[in-house]
Image (cartoon, rainbow, N blue to C red):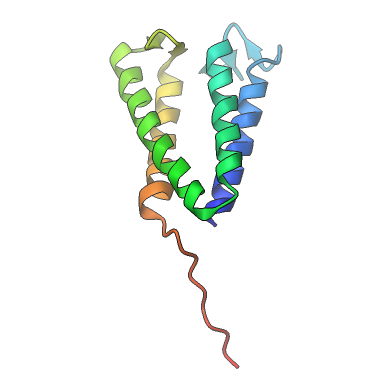
Length: 128
């Protein structure tokens, strides 16, 4: 399950990163008219997606990817709320309230998969 979660996360991040570069899906720096994006933000999503795809090959690396991304997204979330609506995260990319709320949800999901979800799949014996 952990590898599948990392694979799905990687695919979604790649799609979002690529979508951020597609006119029509992104108008006036807003992906789908909701989330603030720019070139750097899109590249961060693409690199994150590729990292999750690579990590999804093993349970150990999947768990590690979720742990690292939980910490990274927690920091991005805190910085995002400090700089406020339409602020810049470390001068690299802009965020707005919708981004900050999404980053909270992602942080919680990554914390769960990285630190709470069991790394070992439990197998139940088949009754004869």
